[in-house]
Length: 520
Image (cartoon, rainbow, N blue to C red; front, side, top):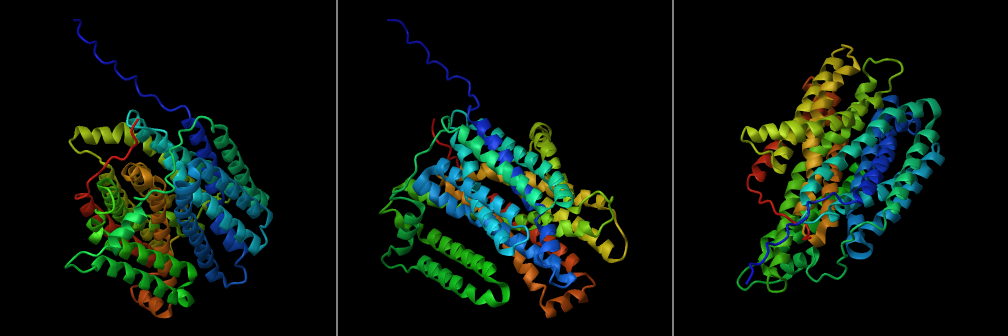
């Protein structure tokens, strides 16, 4: 009897043919987003706040900017939920992209009308935010266990193309705003967003569509509700008490509306509910075992553990997003060529990203492995948060020198930009793939939404800090340190991030990494 022939080896993994459509879509979309985002603060300061004293215009523009960013990174919760439960990722991306295009049209048409312009910002926040978690998780859906190693390269390429679009948008849009006006400067990004939508639609017949889980009896929320409401003989309900306390604190947060505004109050309420309800669910999670299978319980446990990682990343986003507000305003006070616009300095960030991603992957990480140190995702993210803190020490030192009356050239900002960008590559590019890999199959869109929510909370810390330093007693205390308010806030955020880096590193040492890529 002849021996059985050996099993045929699986063919070599190949890059999915549909990936170029998603990457091209992302490049155009990111050009459109950063094209309008990076000129937003100087446009607002020079247009809509002329009625304010000159000393208050920049602060008002920063507040609108960070409120807009909060919206952009809050709406992923809505987009992820709609996609996971009703329409799927492809349909949700396509329809919200059209909303996104309408928002750009409003910016171009209503450059001088506050209501129309703010409506455009809302539509862009809804469209951009709604698709944000879906595009990256849609990329992950195109891979399985057979070719998942290629996904890591694509996520880096995905991040590279984001910065390719950002680089040219940041370099060109301030010039168009200066030379051709706001209609053209905001209209060009709108045309690019329309192009992005068409490119994504052209690949419609090639994509892998992971089925939605509209009626999953073992979803995250159902398991959490069971855990919180199920009694245990002879034991209390500490988790339920914590969840209720979170709801009460969330409601109480709206008492802050008169002093801090509705956006801060709403975000603080959301934080209170998530922290207390999440902690309560963790304490009582085993009580859900009678009603849900073990894999559902472990899925919820994995989500809760990764949410702690996301929470510890929020200080990084506090620092990172201020390069488009605080750093641009600082650049406006520095010496520079007459043809150079302060907002153009931000082009250094994506340019460095395009250099650092291949440098890290082909030179730095292999060298670290040869030296016996594995640059895991969590180790990279820990270092990234620390480097962002160093960037703010550098930019704060620059501010100290300028406050002392010494004029500095804008080229001094190269150092903080280099440090911040290195931190960004270690945190953001790594975090995209990490978030996808840690999410249970039924929660891909929502967990990516929580990754985006970390950016919202990061910008919330900025709004709270800015609102706090407007109080006379706080200003007097800062003056007692010998620092200006701007310099004080810069060093405050540097310390904030360094503490977060230490906490992140300690938590990462105990975190158990899981693998939730789909089977082939």
